[in-house]
Image 1 (cartoon, helix red, strand yellow):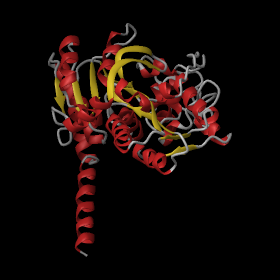
Image 2: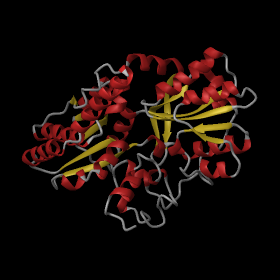
Image 3: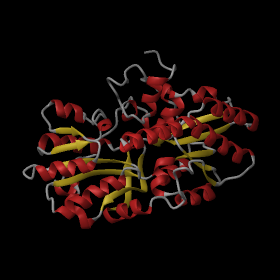
Image 4: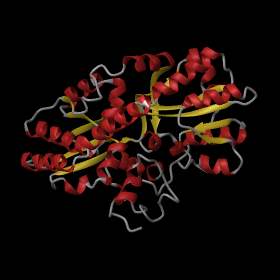
Length: 378
């Protein structure tokens, strides 16, 4: 009974904590503060796809004053996973007879010929898991089968993927490896700013990434490019307060890093998680789907753990292929176009027949607009 009482006490406390940041009155207050503060047009990019979904789903974009133009950034790891890496995952599932494990939102992302879901339908052993540690357990229980976890994500998921390699190494499990596609946020912000077509005045940085990495990497960017960067969460109150903080800086000609998400994010981040990342991974150049190569923008498995790197282990060499010419996901992820400005949006491209990853990912801007906006007739 004591445990049950403790559970309900903490559940009630947690729900109160969540509802506090969905408070409509507080949201309205911050929206009014934005209206009272803004005097000229400003373009603000929310980097994370989770933030994009919250902005669209909660109708915040329609409630902001006309002077505020929210630009949707490249912070959807599923969306930027290279096309040929999807092809490599399909190749492993169908041609190498491995147990291919993945988070669910990767299964419907189109490769050059087929998706992992289609590979599964053709007989590939493709499994949806909630944690890479589950994949390690599968490998341990099935020593005769090779098990590969499709390790996709930003800095947020890197610690767990690194931990899975560390566990496999510690237990001497030889039949486990990861197909890694880890991308980093700060280099992406720099690439977006450097793009001649982009015009962004300030940024909302992703709270969950900063929970792991802290805020120190953003100070050089803010200082170099003279742009405000405000770390925020994902609830309505988080987002509108973060936008207000960016607007206040812009209106006062300031440019610094601020932390709206201080209840979670510490300046130093999670140092233990960072140690785990640095033990298994090292920084290298990374190709971003729809965008291109960004220097020093990804994690790759260190040589010390090469036996756990699926690309090296299975000697996969699949050439890069061109994107679907009808898909403008690169322009959308750089903030140059909005999803509804694509000629195929909601027509040839929809969740049942996606031309690109942003239409199927749970963090994709196209999916957000398709499901929650009135910009498309469905």
